[in-house]
Length: 112
Length: 112
Image (tube, rainbow over all chains, first blue to last red):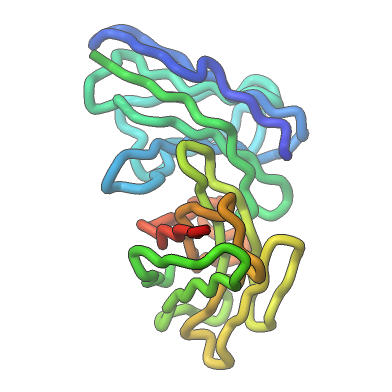
């Protein structure tokens, strides 16, 4: 299995608080992605990174920011969490072939 | 990106072959067919991909029709652990910086 970890695995927070989720890889892959998964919507891309300090928006980027200061870490930040951001968040990585992605175990976030 | 159509759900007896169909009638010449699966509450797992030739790996076989308008993922000897949602995705190789459109997939239930 690809070396991907996500932290925390579960988090409960209150509306208006900042939240940062971390994705860490040991594969030295160039590409990293953040998805969210909600019932009825499947997986949707939030942001992705194609290298250190190189990031771009995905389909549902509003309310989220990302940073990648090292190859191995990709951070997802909710500046001011809202209840609509309650979801399961998955990080993924890929090497030379973008579409062969390896996914982390997910983070379940609940915003009250 | 080509749209794919899959049955909502399928059943398969343990030990038998599971054949999961996917229609992609508008697929373009440079789009590959990718298959992923997601076992309950885990991150999606890459299975296989192909362009026009049939492909086989340790997990599954992929049969693509000659006109490339449909394909079938075959799990040769399904086990209970193969119970999952299976996603068929059509995407250019390296296209969209890896923004995979997962859709709703087929829920495969393998029964003893």
